[in-house]
Image (cartoon, rainbow, N blue to C red; front, side, top):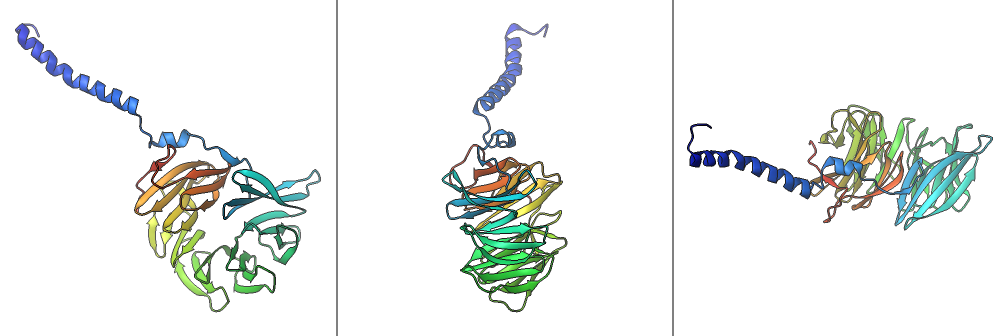
Length: 328
């Protein structure tokens, strides 16, 4: 700035340096303040596991968690074990030899599969067989209103929880997902959600999608489901669209809150989402997540890194919690 008077040179220097100084102060402020809701903070903060088990199925009964794990003896004989967590104290609730365990319901009943013979048993955790029939595998077993409901290779079944005759409510080998609401049993068959009265009767078509239904949740007359390669649907409408390259694999409904899981196609990166009262929240959950149990505040899920618990929602903001606006 040769040729400028000294006073004017000082004024120009001030005008040039002041915005730079302001920018530096802003950078310093945000560096010190941090950003607790950034995706990186959510993804990198580890959540202590309830158990390192990788269960076949996971269920909540009151304040207790139950899950099934199948191991092998030296000769290859399967050993199925039902684990129970009460206030994070772990115990073995049941163990059986020669069977691979599937779903567990109400902390009282478990599916024992004999794949060699192609049959399954519904067993009491205290010991004893309640029913024997076609192979159930990892299909759903539910306890509600004093009755047991499940799907096997031939259709949807029902029986009294205290024992009695097994009734067939719907016939199809394609049924895997089962849900209960207002005295009706809902089930997914291919790309269609149907329902039937819990006491039996005519089967009713509720909604038909575009691809195979992979998850189903029903409550207060509302039906939420996911389809292969798509997001979450509510009846015939799109409720939430999965991000590109991600697939929804689980949907649950607790009161007004809808909770779902989406993962990459390789299932090596999963997110748990929860929507209630106009707010979407999500947390990073790791790989291979399935069987999400939600009580409206706390979500418990099974995955490749074991069984873990996350707090999602409520008035408190947890360091691991990230609020997001999802695509609707």
